[in-house]
Amino acid sequence: MLLSRAASTRRISEGLLRCISVVDSGRHFLQTNEQIYGQLLPHSTYFKSLKSHRRTSMLEAFEQQSYHLHAETLLSQGIDYLKAFPELDEYTIEAADGHFIDHACHTEKNSKGKVYAAGGIYALNLRSGLLRFLCLVTNGTQRHQEIPVLRDHIEKQNKGNNSSQKHLYVYDKAVTDFVWWDRQKRHANYMISMLKENSIATLVESIPFDSRHEINTGVEAYSVYENKGIKFNVVDYRDPETGKLHRFVTTLPMTINPGTIAMLYFKRWTIEKTFNNTKSNFKETKAWSSNTRSLENQMRLTAMSYNLMRVFEESFKNTTARIDSSIG
Image (cartoon, rainbow, N blue to C red; front, side, top):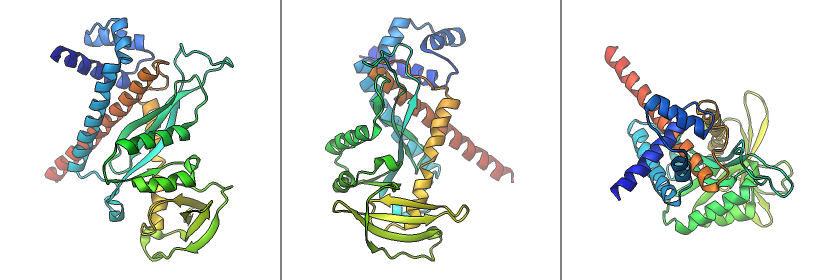
């Protein structure tokens, strides 16, 4: 049993190393690993372990535990990008989005003779900056439809979640399904998105807000709208710099400042920078395999590698700041 755990842990470290190594393929990684680190990994052993059900279960547990440890480490260093907004203290806030990369070389073509990009949905914690993999959308054999997959993931999460913690998802305007999100409030799940231009919504009433509060600068209106009998809140925000009007939709309570809602949506773009990091810095631009379990493991390892780099970066900045302070 101990040998099995040691082997599984070693495979996880190899997966992390593959993410942060500048390699073009699995075979390239094995060759580089042997040349630089002197570790000989048989092809069959390495690629079979990538799609192993048992090792996948261990990787899932390892990912969750490492995420919590990283969160504790960052919090102990004073990292909380939303600490200036105490009205959000009750919420776990994540920017979520689909991320797609080139399909694997041996991906089978569908009935129409086509293959597509492969990928899944990730969530970036806007408080800590940590990334986690939510669910796979497609291995490249079919065109992606991420919103139904996201809904299924959240529904499954609801069944196994006994926590009273409120969860806020910040997503692009593809996510707006007023009836479904209204039901999610029973599970303490909320959303912020951009109101679609063609949305059919009826103004119900205005929501009073403190226009003198600095966070509400640029907010022109805060209102309750209705669609198919479902009520939701809309923020009309005009960017003071560009003059452009943005309309944000949310299922959050009226007590949250409208300017805070606008701020959170703009912070959603942080996840796009994160995806750019995984492609540019980690060179994770192509699926390792068309096997769904292997692909899910690739995405978990990509998120884990990113989180390691985040913790290293923040720790380095804090260490440097302490040294500068002691010298000064």
